[in-house]
Image (cartoon, rainbow, N blue to C red; front, side, top):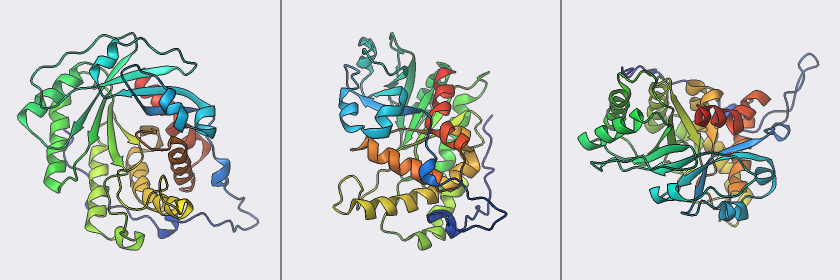
Length: 312
């Protein structure tokens, strides 16, 4: 059954210090917490690697350098065309956990393609409709992971409709498949809005309540992907360090409530369509590490969660 809108009416408030680099001062009785630079995943599983029809990882590897490429021990291939399912699995030393193929929520007929790789499904959600509801139900009945890309800037009523749609889609299914929510972490956002103003902004309070409500779906996880933000970017801006610092401050604002609601066991790192997967990996790892998480949380977000979700 749909869990209903049970998110907290008064959103959790995180201190401003959570969004600044950690203080290195400490007393004699309290040992220093691990430095964020020391918290690195033992291995990496990328939960969203874009590929073409040939499923080749070459284009991704050209942009993924350093630690991300060196430590990669698994990937979920993200295809934009279902015909990719007929391609032969690429010869690669990287284990392929799943090939994610698209389905259209507004299509009246659906067919699950055959593939030599384990299949999962993905779609984009931007409005509610009777056909979208039926298509979402079909996807859940396939018993495979379903990624839902939240592409619209939702109003409160649209969020309620989305929650209701998820509830109906999974109703009476004995074991709901893994549901992966994308572009919820972080969501669409005005990058020019200062952190101090964001903390009291209505949109941020709505985000906290929405995340809390969606976390009540036990099979739901969140993809930690590069944001679709306008404005200065660490991928293209001349002052890369300044843009990177600002992105991290904003990302931690959204990462905190998601950690509170979903826990570190239901968040998965993915490089997505980032122009530089290596830079995005650094931003994501540092943002998570600076929220005072431990090694177990780092390993969960960057590898073990994806193994569990796509191996189930």
